[in-house]
Length: 497
Image 1 (cartoon, helix red, strand yellow):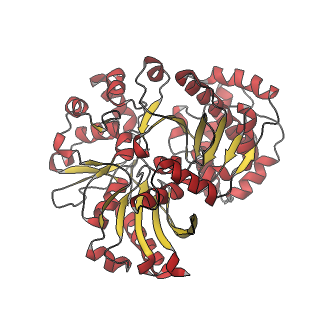
Image 2: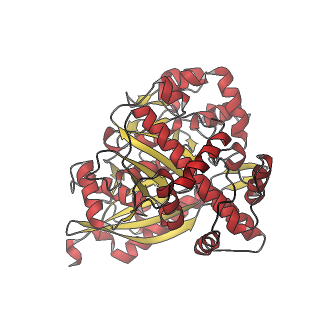
Image 3: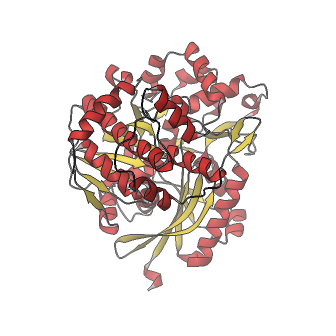
């Protein structure tokens, strides 16, 4: 029976944690098994934040080794790596990482962002890339590195995104997959090539740009040294999947019947969008600060980034440091006991994007805006969840305004989809059905692209049909509306965009 199965390993790297998940393909269905999970906290040094890449690499190879031991190397046919967007590392001509990659929440980005916009206008950047202006974007980080006195840019041979750096270690082949390349704000989404105009305007040498490849392409086989470390077979193929984790997640949206749907990839970031055939460079899209990211199979994900469950994660971290180490389940129980709305925040207010004493920052915001301060963890979490639901409603209205199409149903995927209370609040707030699942959408989409590379499926629609048949989903229907209309009217007054 084992010989009828094939195993495809999804290496899913987030800015706070990583996993190696096995996708078992058998009898026309996928099942997922988590093999190894590890933390990926940024290193902090003199106020700067870095990604501990060598630790990340060590954890990835350990996870692959555990998968080899669990299944046996011969049954593992392919593997694919996805990661969070925007972060990258510089390598020299020998492939050596010149310095630890900066982490996108590094505080230096704020000032670099302001100086960058003095050199290049937001309109020029948007017309080249169609990407939402955010201080975390790679273009800002490159500009900060150009201003740095360590001269790393002059010594670098090229830059590679985090997933591409892992792929380089695995195969010895240095290329950049397009879905993650689009998060750099240095790629033209329609031409699917680098914006040399922005490279030159930035003063970033063109030689640093790696060769671009599409998702679903076999990058190469494992290097012998990696095969020995992981005990995988050298002929194991490494596939360039949707290397931006959101691209992989959206590939697993089980939308097989709905004509007009939106997706919400719910996690540290809440990414809310629709899929379109062509990027939108219009003045309205620019004014609304929407983004056109490259998707798998050449489509465009027209979306907006919302500062999502990062707010909950930072609250949990703050409370843990005070000696109250609550699990996420315990936090859900705390918020469920709060039966009435308390106050609202704009989740995308700049102060909430940085590490810090999040519970106090939320209380301070409420006080500054003339609202009642939440009292205790349960009320703080209720403020976050109500505010996220209202932000989803607001962004959904922006997408509908831009596309001219009303969204009929919202698909919620990702780890945040496990928060049933938040799912129902979103459903009630937007007053339309919400379909939740799969929770492990990123891993599922990663595996879908591996199956495409392995000729098991032939299209994105076939992959989504496979996901729909392999994983259960849960439907939420609206139960309340009037109180959300009143809350939304107040919420929009808090927004500065």
